[in-house]
Amino acid sequence: MNPLRHLFVGLVVLAVAAPAIAKNPPHPSGLKQPVKDGCVRSDFPIGLNQAPEWVYVYRNSAIRQATGVVRVTHEAVDDAILQHESYDFNANLVPDRASRYLMAGSPSSDTNNFAGDRAGNDKEEFRRLHFEWESGTLPLFAWPADGDRAAVWGSWIWDCGHWTNVENNSGEAKLTGEHTELHPINAIAVTRKAPHAAKGNESQTDVFISNDGTIARAVEKCAGSHTKDYAHYDSGFGACTQKKANKIQPLSKSYKFFVPAPAKPKGAGKLRYRTVKHGSSSGSQKVHVGARGLNVTVTLKNSNHVVRYAKSFFVSWAKDASKPAALKVTIKSILIKQADPNPEQPDPTPPSWALTMRVNGAWWLLNDLTSGLKSVTDNKVIEVNRSFKVTVPKGRSVTVQVDGKECDEPAGTITLGLFARILKPCGPNTDEQNPDPLRLLMNDATGIILDTYKSAQAAIGDHLATAAQTRTFPATGAVTFGHGLEADATYQVRYVIARG
Image 1 (cartoon, rainbow, N blue to C red):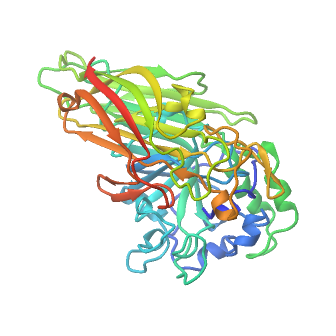
Image 2 (image 1 turned 120 degrees about the vertical axis):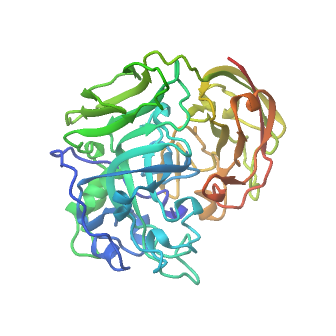
């Protein structure tokens, strides 16, 4: 997203009758379709919230479902201050054949989702279906990890902010067209490649459904109700996006997904399952036990207030005595080597950081584990000393990922004449200074740790990991979070993995 308009764009969406998942429409192609659907190729009206950042493909708000393998998952480095209440969780789906129609463009045309030379379209998104939901809405237990399989439901939209191969659509830009996404999503069912919370030889599928469409939903709905023609929006558009009720999104009449069982060993008995509820959870479920897993149908009634369904399904076979390896992960400490990853304009006061960490599919927000990230300085050692249990199935690897941001965006203060809200998990930032408004509205990426061990046994030990701005992700290649302006080795994390 163009950081110049991060400060300006809109809020929220009104509950309407729940649409059914529609039949597949034609595959979107051509550079004119996003404009026909309501995208305005001008930064100025988008930045001033006079035109939408996102619009429905074919102007159709029907919920779409996609299935596939998830790649390169992480929290956003920066987001639009007035369009969010928390930073987005970002992920990219390599869609199964039946879901590929959701990706606009084609490999031969080098357009839309297939624009290979687009600087603003990170390698993680290339030939994939990007999906997003605010991290404050999507709980950590349901965040997919790289390599997990997922079924995802959500709004099929054009990202109107990027129509060229240059991030800010300026200079010697080439018209490549907007790309399609599911944003916001309203449901996700994640089947773990490596179940991390198993009690025995179990598969694990984590499910979250909610009508909290976040502020993104308001922009999309208001784009449909306040358009004058294909290129202009009436004066009521901006006010529409500010209505709090407009964050509520409609839900599908039901959500159906498959929970696979693990491979059936010799001599095993009947298939069995258990469920775990995560916090408050509404809705009802019907479970049909099949020969190879569960066919689950979840129904969650539409409401004018936020409702959520949050459960995990674990499937196993009776008389299966095999067990995964049990590990104890202890996060010992964080060493901040360079508090400002891009110190072109020094921070007036020590900045705050936000970091997330995962071991396979188990995620933690490190800010919840220590208050030391609220104010960081060069060479500061932050003691964490928190331990967690994870399981690793036989034959599966162990991946440790840490990434995050220095919270540079103004927050809780007036900036450029407008109030900049605080986006979680960052805190207030009331004295940020930068003569360049583009840099003023950008966070710095702190770098990525991505350690992989071929087995649970290989992961055991005392580890000191150093962050780098670019890491190589499986089936993706080199990926850089953020803007490519930051330094390497800005922090280290010491963690210990032992038998649990």
